[in-house]
Amino acid sequence: MVHRREFMLGAGLLAGLSALGWRVAPAGAEGLVAARQYAVGDATVTVLSDGFISIGPDMLFGITPEDFAMMLEAAHLDPASFPAAVNAFLIDSGDRRILVDAGTGTSFGPTLGKLPSVMAALGIDPASIDTVVFTHLHPDHVGGVLAEGGNPFANATLRVAQADVDFFTNEDIKAQAPDGFKPFFDMAAASLAAFGERVEPFDGVIDIAPGLTTMPMPGHTVGHSGLLLENDGGALLIAADVIHVPAVQLARPDVTIGFDTDQDVARATRQRVFDMAATDRLMIAGSHIALPGIGHLERAGDGYRFLPARHQYN
Ligand SMILES: [Zn+2]
Image (tube, rainbow, N blue to C red; front, side):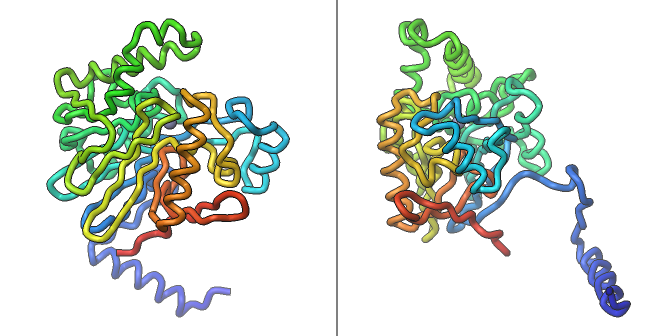
């Protein structure tokens, strides 16, 4: 039962908020922007959703289909059509605007390629990005610079690990790759070319900007790199592709994915990064962790659990 007085109060509150300039978003898809914003020190990090891709048990190593189904059901997910998130990240420090990865672009079908519309909804002009960092050169991280109208990040310098540049532009390695992987090499090369002269590869640990440091996390690709943002007492580790299926790999960090260049190194890197994040109580973000895409890791049994970051009230 709704009391009339409460209803009146509610209506009055809405009218008051409107008078203060608040816009009450309409319900439905157009009213929802698939992004989350967090302050890290005095920088703002925006998790930008590009959409989702489906990852099934046939793409994983080290787990049976039965165990996969059991773990997804335990996490209240549908094992038959498991949607894995694809995120990019914007780090805005006031004087720098750094985009970490660029989404899939138009090459992955209708569930992906949302990054441009999400950025537009947030009023982020691609031309205002001064630096794009590719955590690695896989298509779901670089496809967004291969837009039909040209690279939308027209003023950005690209930073990417030299090891990935060397790997994905090596014709001998490409020739030996399975046919299904060959387009990865073509897209990687095209994404580098999209920045023309504005490509500055890096080796190992370097500062991309004050307080933003690369952190090698090899295995998924040879040059796969996370980023550690430390700003005015806040810290965030963008761990990119150390995890693809949280419902499985948190509890079972030993499980790897077919896209890993080196399964053993990828597994060791995941265990090292998880251990560090849990031990240091470090806020962590993942390219394939569903929104908010950011949170904390805790030890749980022989593995870990993820605690998504709560909404940050301003
Ligand atoms: Zn990925």
